Length: 244
Picture 1 (tube, rainbow, N blue to C red):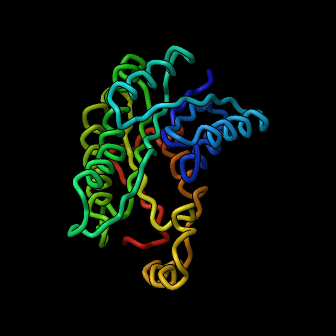
Picture 2 (cartoon, rainbow, N blue to C red; picture 1 turned 45 degrees about the vertical axis):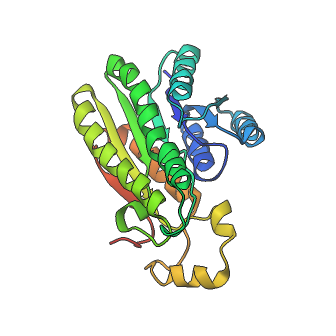
């Protein structure tokens, strides 16, 4: 029986790499996007051309009803949901002195509330199945904080607390809940950072290099696999030793 995975915010970046990796493992992927429709469709096409199965779904996971409709539609289309990867996330960096309420709320709503929304709506499905894998994408910033990222750090720290709580709630039904915390990973956002700042960051990374989205995806794939059946409530850092 084919496994069905939902990957939120998978039109680009780490989410895209996760979707490709899961599809490579023979898992049917529901590709969720909010704005990147063309990127999502390109991803679906790439997966299908490589012999996999995927379908794109537009939804704003920060909206409770949108997330509910997303999960419901995927369940209707495929009959089950085996894996949920909460990857959708945004940044709106600003020193607290200048950060607006909206900038704080927007980041919390997408990153943390969006994760809650999707877990909330997939919860009943997985409980009935008595099986499931939930993997939440946090960040090392949620563990160590960062100047100008109070909103982002709070959202990612919240995801860690949510992960640990849900792992305890769902463990008796064979549902595991874990988090992956990426460090400094190659992405559209890191491409815009100047070389001098990158050099400063590399000083804090024992492996002395920036990570790849595929390396994060590999950790997610492991947690989604049968090999990780006795692992729950954990945070796996993919950060080159940045947080030790």
